[in-house]
Amino acid sequence: MRALAAKVAAAVLVLLLVGVVAVLGKAWWDSRLPGTYSVMDYGTPEYGGGAEGAWHAHGGHGADGVSVADLRGPAGPPDARFVLTARHATIRLASGRAVDALTFDGRSPGPELRVRHGDLVEVTLANEDVDEGVTIHWHGVDVPNGEDGVAGVTQDAVLPGERHVYRFRAEQVGTFWYHTHQVSSKEVRRGLFGAFVIEPRDAPPEGLDLTVVAHTFDGVPTLNGNDSAGRERVPAGTPVRLRLVNTDSAEQRLTVTGTPFRVLAIDGTDLHEPGELENVGLLVPAGGRFDVGFTMPRGGARVGIEGTDAAIGLGPSRGPVPAEIAPTEDFDPLSYGTPAPTPFGTTSDFDRRFQLTITRKPGFFDGLPGLQWAINGHIYPDVPTFVVDEGDLVQVTIRNDSKGIHPMHLHGHHLLVVSRDDVPASGSPWWSDTLNVRPGESYVVAFRADNPGLWMDHCHNLKHAADGLTMHVAYIGVSTPFEVGAAHHNTPE
Ligand code: C2O
Ligand code: CU
Image 1 (cartoon, helix red, strand yellow):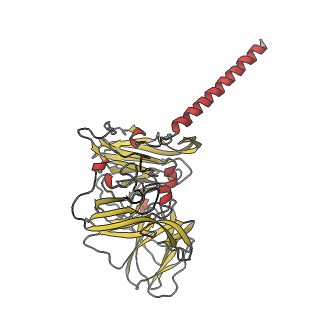
Image 2: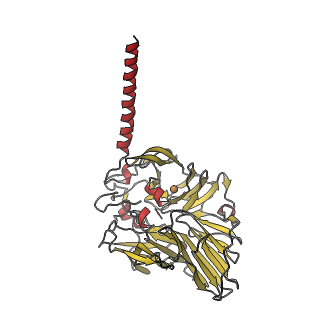
Image 3: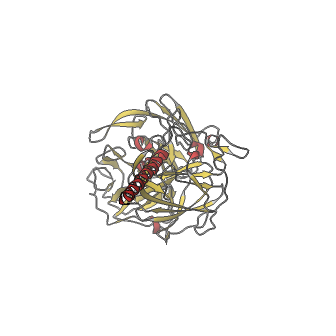
């Protein structure tokens, strides 16, 4: 009797083990991404309470379907025309340190592109020798989807010897940036990015209008590619606008010392009646932009990455600039400035409401076991796809239940911040395209679905994105002929 019981128990145990191995094996097997696939084949469509419709009208476009490839910018003679050539180059930081970089036109940051509001912009990307391929994404510029520069979603990666032409109208005003969206977690870090500024048409900048790009090369923090103090000669009384751009994958704290200042804009949108700040740290999210303004004081001023030599001294004389004063608090846009009308209310009737909750959980990502990023409990590519219809007013609640900071970036749209941790936004309307969501935080944001396409929505810690913190917002009826992988080895993250 006893021997039989032992045998049964052993058999049950073996079966259990086989079962566990089979389940794990299947999870592993199922998690492997094919070498070539369409982002339309994955993702679990969610409709947020709105009308349902086939967003992946596969293999092209039905009667009322449209292909991403047809959602291009306007034809006609461009008002501003640029050529950017991607190539390997050794760049030298001010300290003399050499960096083996990937560059546009041999430098990093690449050339600053400045255009005026309303310009038809044409940029030709040429790839000289970047083997893995290159694209250009216009971060924060709400271009037509076919100009968005995402390899495998809106175009094929541009391989060595190839070219690609981007055309769009500059319909916003403010500070943006451009970067490759092919193997972006590696290529952006190595230098394939630059600033993109759209000036107002009728009020060209007066005084000093200076873009300040913060980037870490090989572990060394830099401003505009300099790892030591730079200098700008600025007469006292000059109006100054600094366009701070963080091209890193982690947030950076920038400081302005020697003068009170105002934050004039966030992510390319001017703030309403911004108040004066002093000794307040500016935590610029990865991929985010803050414009700050002040009147040049006699004693000079300094902008820098906190606690580093990466700084720019500004002043009337060649004399010393003020030393950095550690900020006593950090800038918080939620209650900064004063309210102003917005094109839609934050308590409006939303056509769709979505939840985007970020966690970490054990599982397989592309055949590798580990602690993975999950969206609404699912690991990429089983993440949700938010399906919208043109014209919808959309609400998204973004929740970070993980221990990392996630600068969430939606392509092609700007998000109006409604509340954070249930505290309503009470200052200037705060429009963001790259919203830093800290551990434990929850934001309610809203946007108008007014730019049809298949759009990435991902963390701008580009390593996180490459590890699966990536999803899409898809318009009903829009499909893409491009595939991840395929002949151009498209790898958006
Ligand atoms: Cu700045 Cu999808 O990126
Ligand atoms: Cu992240």
